[in-house]
Length: 82
Image 1 (tube, rainbow, N blue to C red):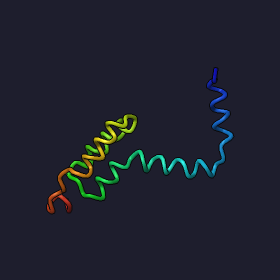
Image 2: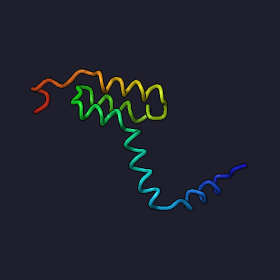
Image 3: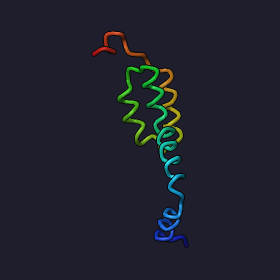
Image 4: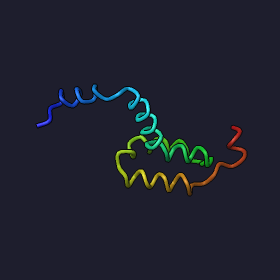
């Protein structure tokens, strides 16, 4: 059986450059619904971000957030400056 100490030993053997590439790439994909909502100027950006934190663990919820980020309501011009 694969023990926890072996797992951490295996993680320690990974090249640091690979970690430097993997972690930002993982976070960019994980928070993609939030990034899309931010660039598309969505009204519910905060709610999408808060829902994105646990939803990244579920592909169904993550896909629902992607749809919400692309199809949600845009902020009104008065809300953009406030």
